[in-house]
Length: 269
Image (cartoon, rainbow, N blue to C red; front, side, top):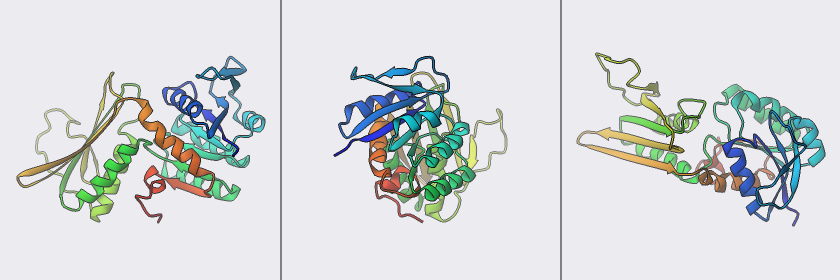
């Protein structure tokens, strides 16, 4: 069977490099191109030493040249939509791991994918353990009125709170059918210490060197607490989910948001 041809956008970033490594390890996949904002070389060496692939800052010409089945994008929210327009116009499927994409932009991705007969997967977190964490939190949320989320990432992460924390809070409130109860603090000795309020859940962001991606959900009621935690100790933790999405997206049309849908944990609306 012909391998799935993949172009990686944002290949110089930490996640982009990890994706390229993962592609080289899977015999069903073939990296055929790499894109980055600034490029000084025409070709990029594959990390396993198996050869060179075209390397360009011009996504449109790169896709025309390499003819991939799938574009994997781990760049920034601001850069995603123009890339989606380019890729879908050339009938290229999309796997997007960038966080901070707005509802309006997600709607446009869905419309562009449907109009061009391709699939698109957008996921705030590709770690399968993180998807299971949210699934368990949704179950538990029905039985607790109070909850807080602490998300912890490396110091170079651009957005706060994380897309995973935002998705977790929304899914927990949706499962309950209402917002959580947020205790009132009468005196703030230091502003911001109670975190941000989303659906009655206080969300706290930690940014430190040495961290990768971690999240703790704490729910409380009289005399007890329940904590659900997930830790990604390396970026390899995201790769099984990314590879799974690459292999699934070719058979889709339109947008699927969240790895949980691909894993069968969530019904499509």
